[in-house]
Length: 149
Image (cartoon, rainbow, N blue to C red; front, side, top):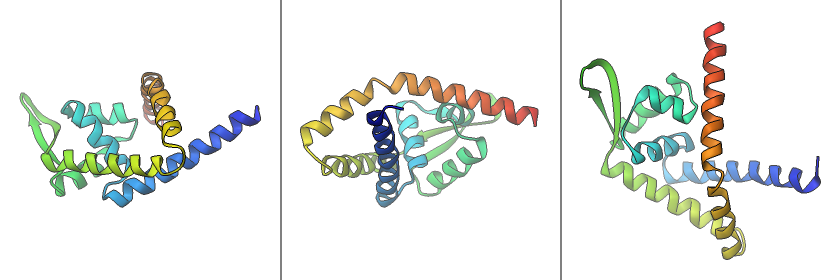
């Protein structure tokens, strides 16, 4: 493996760890942040959220319950579906996202040259669609394996 690539992978792992810790310091976990961020884009059914976030339903249920208990999301019945639950962001949930993103941004910008960090973050945005696609593929495979077990 190319040494630059290896070094980049290692930095990415450190970035994930520090981002997770900063999220925790903001008062929400990284999983909760991801959940809030997706709900902010559009209120969604719990099953769809689990698939989109590539987490198990029990993980999603626990995260959603914790966010609901804190008033960051509302769990609403889906009209016409007695068992369906949809999650919607509250004003407090929007504030939690802003706080986490502010803290993460400040952390990242404090790591080095601000222009270089901003440039790196802009470049990472180009990976969003392929990453989302890969997460969905991984979740489908995980669901198939669970069904076979």
